[in-house]
Length: 143
Length: 196
Image (cartoon, rainbow over all chains, first blue to last red; front, side, top):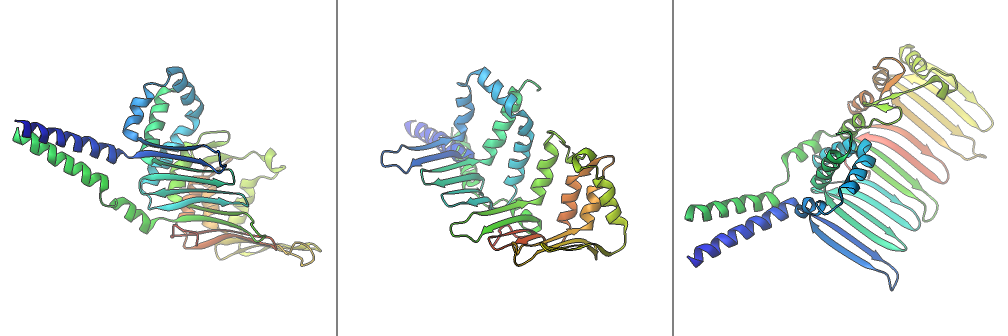
């Protein structure tokens, strides 16, 4: 009986793990170059995003939805379209003291910013951006 | 109980396979047929600026119609004569489209030369700066099918989405090239997803 329970538990854990892996994760890394600079490293499973949004104030979501509304259809179209594209470098801008790089890698949108002051790396699953756009649209007044 | 355990294991296996899975077939197909618009800016000065843009045309086609802001609506842009210093851009483009091949504008000045030519389905603009000035060279090569597509909407609108579609139907083409002593700018179209 215990064996069966353990098997069931292991199966559930594997299922939950597979779901989290499948949904992907948002990775944020900010490293200030200064000796005393701050270093922020975040890895958030996107499966937790809907739950996290439940803790955001309704008014805040409504305001964000209203502000972003004109661009949300474009964001959705862009991320849905990008998901069908092969890996590519979309934008690269380099100056004497700064470099910005935006690329599509697998199912992720990857943004890297390197400057003399800090290094920022953000990677977000395209599906998460599409989902967020959908949710914000549902929170904006015109819907 | 065994059935439930097996079902769990099978579902976990399917999800794990999907999570780590094979590259999507749609991506591979898109890679084969996709047309890409590239922009490349290089500054020759030491530590100069560099810009690379690689944009799939199909993506631009899908995104443009979703932007409804100011004069851009449903992939079309509204042009007012007042903004063009009284020049009717639509009439001008239409005249260019329907007229025979030839050289329309030739200017030879002290600061440089300008030529505007219609030739073999293309509108060509050449600008050459004199050596004692900036030594700038500008080449613009616009397929006339793109001009046709721009004018395909009615009234004082230009159809940008139709123009993108027409551009996508072109072969590999260099659209704009600007060179001077300090920088080079290139805008071109091909089927590669890199600007190298």
